[in-house]
View 1: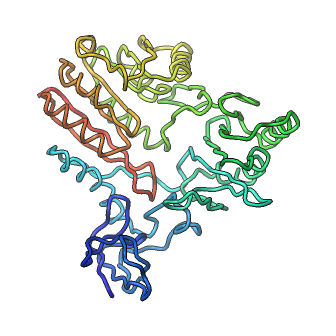
View 2 (view 1 turned 135 degrees about the horizontal axis):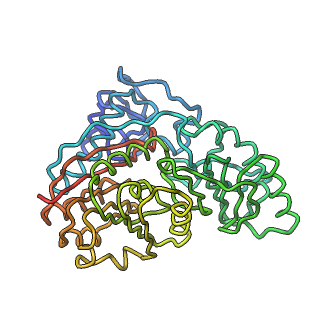
View 3 (view 1 turned 90 degrees about the vertical axis):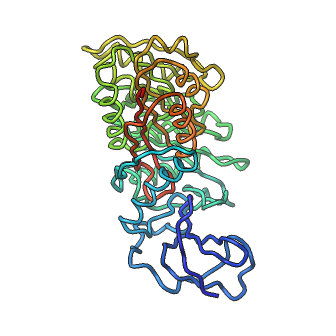
Length: 409
């Protein structure tokens, strides 16, 4: 049976309609014709052959594409790829009942991702290091990664040696690798219990590889240099495992949107502030109150603020905003707010903002569905959308970032 791909689903799979309903075909594009394998079992993801490729199809940039689960869309040309990412935001807003003019996608370049999470697992006498296969716990060993900065890709041999040393037989090891201005910061988690000899060997490996810092479950094993990133020219030493936007150029584009929207505000609150991605930049133009649940992240941005001249006052508050959203009566102290929550969104905070007199809000999100829900709450509370911009920092994946800028109507 031959089928024509009619659309792309939210996870990047091609969709074709069958008598039993929609079927999903990975690594296909609209307009392509596929043929079901003769012995393909019935189901939503049948085996298939590509019969007629789209003229929009391009050669994948990575030899691991199709096996590694990190990328979904390396086969898509630039136009359908950008349209797909933008439509993720459009569709999420439509499902939430939000009327919004969604801007064009702000792109990011290959080899620009400064942070990756690798998984290592023992397989017999070998340790496999790479990414998970799609919808699987199977590790796909990688030799190259065209989304990552060259410094990360060049460190793969060292990271394999380190993983061989740290991985036990009971569970996978995670390596969070961040490229900073002072070298790689490697944060390992879920390692086996290390002997003193293994600990010394890990430290020696890190020093030989000129890694800035190596930590294990938040314990710093060795710090040759402070791992520093800059937020708008303000240097910040990252705590081990701290959150960081994946692509520096995308972060800068988001910060520009936020800073421009909140220009003129005298007191700004930054909720889910992390290490100061927005708060430190905003402190150049306003008094800022940064709220975050992770104390080390707050300490990092406070230290950066103290060390930088010319900034307006910055206060910090450790607070779990999911359990204890700031009430509307306290929000009256601010004339503008930015929030950048995890994928779960900021529903409770959005409800308080909707009941507050705050004049301007910048909502940043890596999840269009929860962003749309939160924006709907704000719109129903009297805000209007000034702009909505999708940004790419998860290249060739089905994930997209977005910044919604709102103001009191």
